[in-house]
Length: 116
Image 1 (cartoon, rainbow, N blue to C red):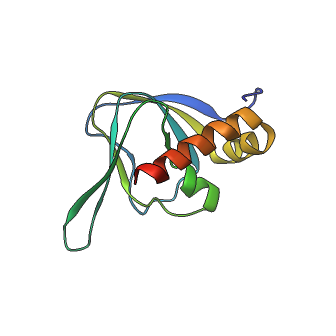
Image 2: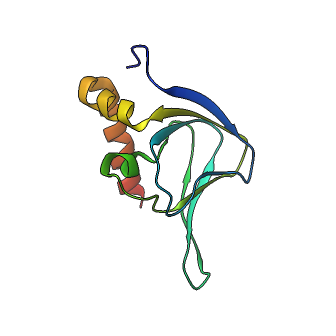
């Protein structure tokens, strides 16, 4: 749905680098183009919980941007990763204006819910 003027960029993350950190405020949504990431939390008493492993095509940070929530869990590159980062306001506008983009996002989110 890009129409020009949007704030998007391709970004690379080596293994081990954080893409999003638990508790941070975010203003972007990432589409994972290459690689895999792990989504996890560490409780205040130090317990580690693996939540999800993402793969290319997955959205990262969409719920946080849509609802203005802080990041719920850490997202860290497991392998060499490449993302398309989309400004949060552009992401919301694309959802409103683009049926195909909105359907892609809906499928992704419902798939995440089904797998959890």
